[in-house]
Length: 368
Image: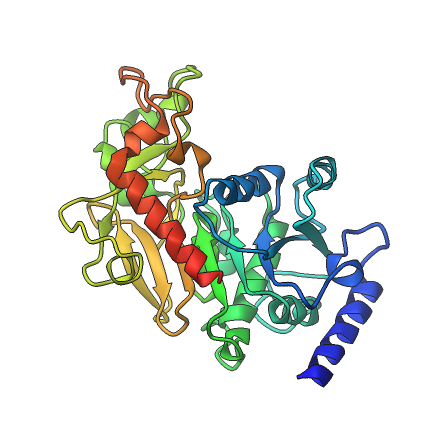
């Protein structure tokens, strides 16, 4: 084990040194401590780091002395100098950054590529990874023409998809041995886009627009006439200019009987469908058979949760459990113009609050 660790550290330093400019954020190359434990974060924006800090401070996420490494592709559209300043100005000594460079294309993300060695090192030196939300994945990756997708950061998706492919494998390349075969307890947990990335990386496809493809509703005016439980983000904002209109919708979940949320999250209120915060217009279409479905929308048309059949700490949800407003009375918002303004905490109610706390408890278990 000692020889292997020395080899990995040497390979890490060498590969990052030759591929990354000196001004980059090279945590593994400069400050990595093998005596510590680390969790990886994709898309480490200021907002996402603030969310992790909040969840820890509110004792919703328990990670002990574990530290965090935000990983990102140099070609992403976000200006990570904001994150650098935020970490520096707030003396966040448990948050670090790793900038990755190399060549990624749609043609090489499902095979060994420029990033493979660094992916292997990051996997070997961490406990797991949290995949955050974001914008649409380019449909060409899952074999479709772009019609209703809103792709704004394609380079981000190339890196995250390739990393998850290396972690979990894919029917795109069935001969590749996924990293988790070496450590099946490693955790991979995705929220919103994070779950979609897990799906596409393993060979799945996406519904490019839920209202159009599932409900034949093509305009905001048509969409807001649907049953509210069938709307997955707030289209009233596109009709009225009102600062109290939230960008989200809250809808209940239909949890699959005997699945992950009952057996491992320990949500035992079978007669209550917890409300979750939703802000997406796409959803999983076809899944690789490595996944089991853990939750759906109330009408069953939208997959809201998945869990890997082989790796116990690999699961994702389509909703957003990391929004701080879910856990405190803060702000007053509306979904529709005639609604009474309420906080997110009021909207999900006591049962929704308990459900989210239990979910973060399960995430904490995976991280420890």
